[in-house]
Length: 259
Image (cartoon, helix red, strand yellow):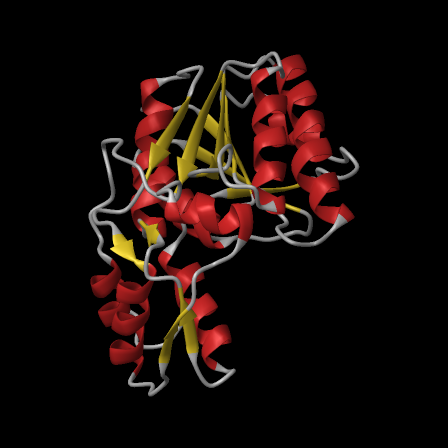
């Protein structure tokens, strides 16, 4: 396919999967970081979304941007990176003549009343108004995130689940594949969902996790309260959109004996 693509958030879990897949697809990859790095089949550039330092240089000659940078659950810093930083990125990309800005968000971000989801919605709005042809891919929760969440909860000696909550966890490798394909298809001007190959209840996922990790914990059923519980039980963490990923939760657990 060719062309130069800047990847923000290249040091993150998803960035680590996207960068090599872009290189395999024939793109010239610029991987963005706040500190000097090397390797991974990419040309590394130093830039900072919170200040704008280095953005113009990082974008010079780039035809597209895959925007993965995030800072979840870090208070005001989250806003500085994700909303204000994206605004700076859009301004610099517009000035550089970038032809496609591809942003990753979360399935249900516009329907689930959770603070960080609201941040993703505000950032989507910045992308839409940024003056650069755009696409948004809303991904489901990553397998590794679910894995770590169960591990943290299990430290309390039990796993609390709402059996009516359903999710559609997805593997970062599948998301990376979808992003590379979405890039090749050009800007869509819309948000699309991308989930895993199966919908599982919170209880099913928890019991599979316990079996795979060989951990003994009682599973306690509790109905999640409030608007958040209503949104989760309403299926807003799932999608019927196609294409979808191929790697199941059980396969992930087999391939990753520990988180």
